[in-house]
Length: 132
Image (cartoon, rainbow, N blue to C red; front, side, top):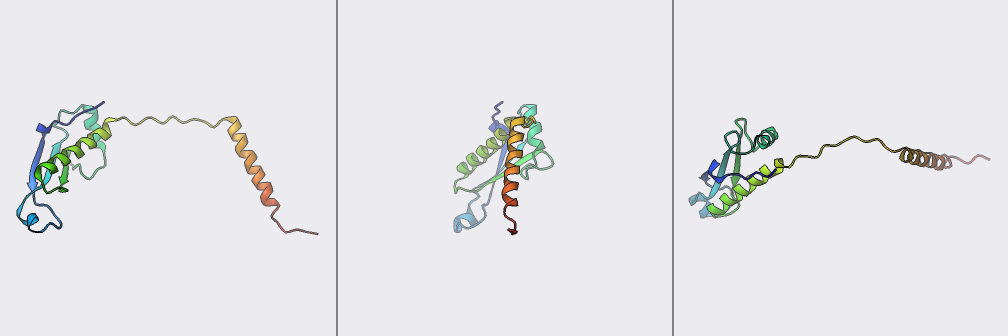
């Protein structure tokens, strides 16, 4: 089940970037806050439920995904980076995890395990003191 994020449902706000960068950081708001409301989106219900069930710090209590992108000095590149990261987050929950079915060990594998335990026990028994 593949679901793409509609860019029209995403809101961007330009903020000042943190960290080193000289005068450019102080003058230009090129970092981006991306906000995506999961509940009001056009994603399939199953994906919405799995997104909201994630224990991810980027998803707040109101069900809004907040991503911050500030890698680039360009506002457009930061927007693209934030959208790409949001899409990766949605894609990560779109794939259903495979259900693990418990199996029992075969009789021969149990026998092999017990035989190797017996052999190693016999080897260790030979390591004791030698009595005359």
